[in-house]
Image (cartoon, rainbow, N blue to C red; front, side):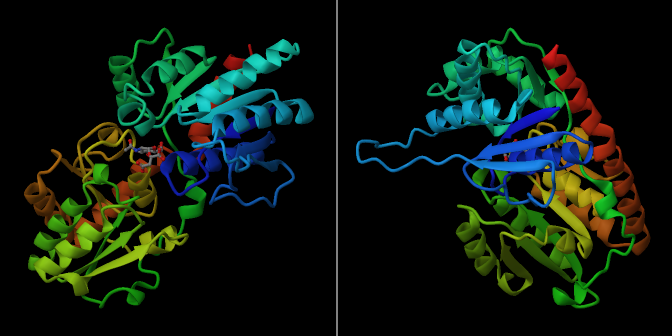
Length: 373
Ligand code: GMT
């Protein structure tokens, strides 16, 4: 099949999922065309089956806001015609589903039928999409998609609760390529970051308010009082400064390393002992799954889709949002014994294995067959 994928090309989870999906589809023989404003960060173009088409919005003095949806829908029309695309898969409803629908209608005028699959990722529904500014357009474009998928049952339930939908939503969870994580050796180069007796705790996100990153610092502060440890904060975002200030206030700034955005996430996770994700909202928690795939247990909140990924008492533990005392206690219960830590590491990997690319990508292929029909 020839598939066009529209996504955000940044470090965000939805872009990562879309990119990994495109790579996996190409490996399974499909021809994949990414249509977005920049080459997706994780995309390697060295494949005969992967193509990238850049959407550019030229500056014009009259435009106060750049009309990206217009440029995207026009680019989609051209790409579909030129490459004879069979199906469009848009990731993140805003504005991709809307632009996709416009492209579909323009093509219809020329007698070309383009089925459209929309995948909802989370913030497009629970945070931004739900805002009155966007809600009518988001509702419309979800209803006009041929097939709609969500990355968790929790996101499906939220979408049905928040929007007036005629469409049934199919749950296709996010996935991870376990063959990239089959190295059982988990202590690789840990000396880069910590002393031999120190535990390494990691948090990875876009450091936005919804991630409750100051809770990460609070949890770590309680852990480091009991056992020698280091905290690695990976990512960039608006809450970073607040976190840095909190570390100074608590006198733990030498134990917390801010690494910024990294393309070496797997290396970092390889020497990590515990992953923290105390988010306010999380439709899935791809970062938690990536950690688990590297054999890293997760301490997370129990919000949204997190209980579908992080299994309480098996791959880690779940607590109510904001309960930093309990999260620290549970973290310590895993970290204080080498035996318990080893058990949780193995179990985290086993749970991650149930989300392997090989198991999930065929579900998308089934969705495509349905949409084409
Ligand atoms: O919140 C983020 O990390 C970014 C955001 C995005 O849209 O890129 O992530 C959302 O989609 C991810 C991939 O499906 C999910 O794993 C995240 O849980 C989800 N974020 C939220 O729901 C807050």
